[in-house]
Amino acid sequence: MASFSDIQRVVNGEGHFAPYNHITVTRIEGREAEGTLEVRPESLNPMGIVHGGALVALADTVAGCAAFTCGKVCVTLDCSMQYLAPGTGSQIHCLATPKKLGKTILVYDAVLTNDQGQTVATGTYTFFAKETRVEDAPF
Image (tube, rainbow, N blue to C red; front, side, top):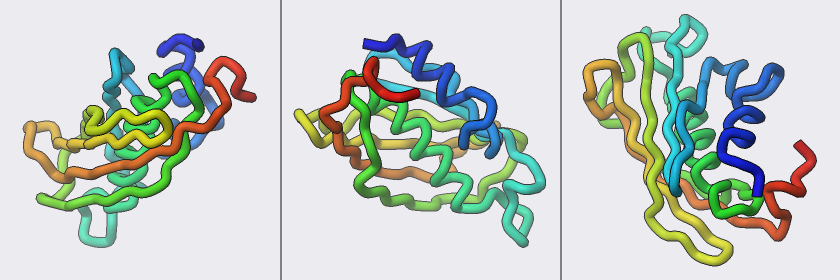
């Protein structure tokens, strides 16, 4: 299997979605992953708080990296976010932990917090594990 650092390197690599959107995956370990969103002016909605879509992108990226730890390429089937407080601060942090690890269906919980440790959103992300092994993926 490709190492967790290989997955992290690809996701954080130049020209990919995550860095373009100021998202960095900071840790993939065991069946969990963590990452951050650097809050920039383009991350904000017209009210000056982090756009909900930016929070979804962070959570999906981080949870997706956690899902890849099953050793297979995973794709998002479904996601649900609950916005609990305004996204403020210089960074939003995300921790993705497994809720259900099936043979082909994996479910992850994502918790997003601001710099002060306040939970700004939570989400549930469901992934389908394809037959393609991570080490055979074309990236």
